[in-house]
Image 1 (cartoon, one colour):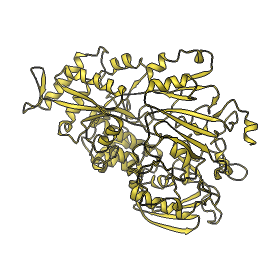
Image 2 (cartoon, helix red, strand yellow; image 1 turned 45 degrees about the vertical axis):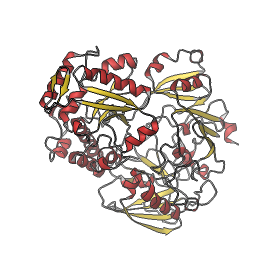
Image 3 (cartoon, rainbow, N blue to C red; image 1 turned 90 degrees about the horizontal axis):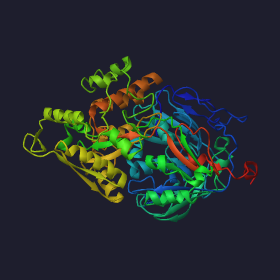
Length: 604
């Protein structure tokens, strides 16, 4: 839920409240989609015309233990349940950095000072049980999620100071402050729940009773630990919207769950799974030399991925005194030999993460800070190192031997400045205590990475224990910050925004279940996020994001790992997809069966 804050552009604002023309909201520039003859926004043109019908089966590694994706007590909800069964007030475009188009709400009004936002709902909107979706349902949802929802919902909805219902299909929100230009769009993306079908007293309980939504699919067969099926609602109200043409093409979308990655791949090769986004570079490089690929029955492609690649890395828990010194954190990063790991474990297909917004215009990597960035950072002297300010810093590079002596010596020298010394093969602090910690992981892949780091650090006398735990224990300890180090990934969109508070804000450092895994507490970080959200022009926004990137890099909160430069996509040829993929990547709800005649399928 992010947005590039710049001048808000409202298409056709000021229409009469009783019959507002459909409106879109972009935070910079104009909405890209054209209008049809009736004034409705049209979806991107897809050629050939998508067919409707058939079933899509997708494999997922892991498990799910609840059908409620909106409450913190639901440990893991199944894939697809939000995007397929629930609907927000407005839909985010997959092919634009951040533009919202009409859905449940036909139009939106934002006060000039951003102190209020009003939504006009589409009177045709219905929940899957046939009941109308009204302003009372929106008010109920916001009140419910503010009290019982996940922290990201509570944080955003906590900024709503009052809710006013102005009619069955008109609702107004009063907002605290007026500097957060993203907040109206975050509110527009909260999924709407039915007041008549939910008991607030039991909402937070986990279970396998699906929520009633207004989306194009309903939950079908559920096999806990095995699969979940979503069935297209043939009475879905959204079929009447021109903007929804080309979506919800499958009669059924099923997610099959696998504990083991090898078993999931074998199921794909056997035709039991239709489409696969590969996550193992070794398998991508060597595992697809099979008859179905050679014959063209399976299409293997490196699909472009235009969005920022985010950051993955070993995360230091700075709540531990051991990692409170930035010199210690930087020193330990010199021991990780990415070049050796990439070549020996990943067939050389990964690139090193050098930014929290890697491979995008938002990244500070390789760019000296501009005048606007320096102005933003001026109140925080020392928050950004000189080499990072000048765009000259890169993660430590090695000779690829797995034991680069120069890098290990740099680690020893930097630890010495923090009061550590190497005695008898053990790195000790001033009191003689050994430098030792634990890396908590779940899964074989992360275990291999952690063992590689442990082996490297052992050469400079640092003792690292790798603890493998099951997914339930891992999630519980992660949410309570009960670890020394973990491996984490922060994915990002083309328009990072409020979620950065939840990842890096000082308040989130003490908030259980937040994504501030490192426990970072920095007024400079908080200030750069605030500058992002208040930026009134695109250039100011980009400068604020790059300034945030520089502050984060200077904190050495992680040992950077890597990212894939493409989406590694494999699909059986009977599955069609938009070409090119949207800016935000693969979206199965926009795919279709290529072996069904489109004209006949649309007539059903």
